[in-house]
Amino acid sequence: MGGDGVTGQDVRGQGVIGPCVTWQDVSMACTDGIQLVSRLWSPPGKGPWPALLMRQPYARAIASSVTYAHPAWYAQHGFLVVVQDVRGRGDSGGDFQGFTQEARDGADTISWLRQLPQCNGRVGSYGFSYQGLTQLLNDSSSSEAASLPDCLAPAMAGLDERLHWASEGGAHWWALGLGWGLQLAAQRCQRDSDLEGWQKIRTSLEDGSFLNEGLQLLESYDPSGMALAWLRQDPRKAQGWVRHQPPEALLRKPMLLIGGWHDPHLRGVLDLWERSRRAGGDPQLRIGAWGHLHWPGGADAMQLAFFQHHLQDKALPQNHQEQLAYQASAHGPWGPGPQQEAPIYWELHPENASAQDPDQDWSQYLVHDPWRPVPGRGGHLGLESGPCDRADLDARNDVICFSSAPLEQPFTLLGRPRLELAISADQPGFDLCACLSVLHTNGSVRQLCTGVARFLGEHCLEKRIRQLEFQPLMVQLEPGERLRLSLAASAWPQIALNPGDGTMPMGGTSANHRVISLELGKPSLGVYSLLGEQPGVN
Image (cartoon, rainbow, N blue to C red; front, side, top):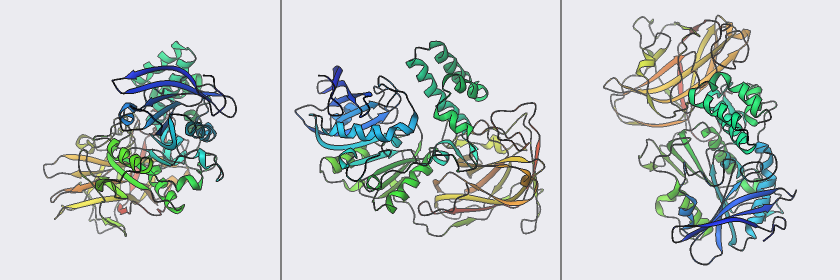
């Protein structure tokens, strides 16, 4: 049947998955007349059913199945699953304008969805990354409750485009930002039938040349895109960046927040937990030993229990009732974690024998050679994220290592590590790139988390106390193991190489990059509470 505003649907295709689940593609008209296309997966039997909505820019048929169970799985549990191509993507009409378009379109979609004959009027939303933020961008007023979801499960997303999507420590997420922006640009080329542009982008991503030519590709194929706009903004200053403000009523809705220790958006998830609590909500928080695209064990069981409780009135199973639950290692058990109010400070000592008495004032020296920069590896900013072995990197002379005394008993470390140390450079610009690892009794080194901080300007020449914040972490340490801190002046290509001349880094090494010498004082490492107000260093 033809579309008639947000209350109508236009069937574009349909099919059957197995003996039970059916699907159909339908379109709806937004309040401005733009048609958005969705795929609906219907459960077996006769509805209506509660609906689960995902809105994404990557083609509805994919349905984020890289991390979630296929929509047919949720449909088999009694949900009408709806995955929509956002405006200007897939088969939906209009021009894609990124996050700025989603508040109005999201409200329109939920109002439309509640009125579908297949839906019983109850709606939940789910999705990660872009699909996580689309759940939170909704311009409903308090008088438009019908356009808000009844419950939501945002994963791996945040509200601050500067700190949760594009940068940290004053440095752009270089490889991640370019890679994501070029994915969107390639899909734009595909939509516009620009096969040559699509192939150029795909080749650059496959052979790694995007790390140096990515800006030019974005300027050619997606000049108005979010990724390029972010890379042109100064990540050291909040001015000019967007920080989204969801309706207070939305933040009070039942919410399941899902994050990963090795995901770059984890700080955004923790910020959402704080905001929901301040608004009067009571969110659940789950953080797994996961990267952005790799979720061992998955989140489907916890997510299904959440939606069955809030949309089907089923009792929440005992193992899903905790408000806070964390996983320290892949395939490990979930639990609430240790309670920590005050910071835990770790005594660290230099590992090289030539260092002076640690109880005296002393300095160590580090030389950054832009010809052979220290690479970034794993962590939350790596193209291959997660824990990794870094013994070979720590053996380099342009990496300085400190370690704790061996532990005498098991210890669970949970929180936000923060580093302070006095440091100066001989150039008006430098980067400080740090890693925390566990040094096992057999001598192997497993990197746990990383952090970066960028400094530009004449103040770099002065020896000052400077700070660096690591990715939050949870790890179970065993007797005999030690905590290791590794310091370097680069983490290529996770962040662009600092040229040392005071300008904002925007790529790899060049003939204009300078050798940078650093003088470092004794480091102070504290691990602060994971939740609660945090004094920022950005």
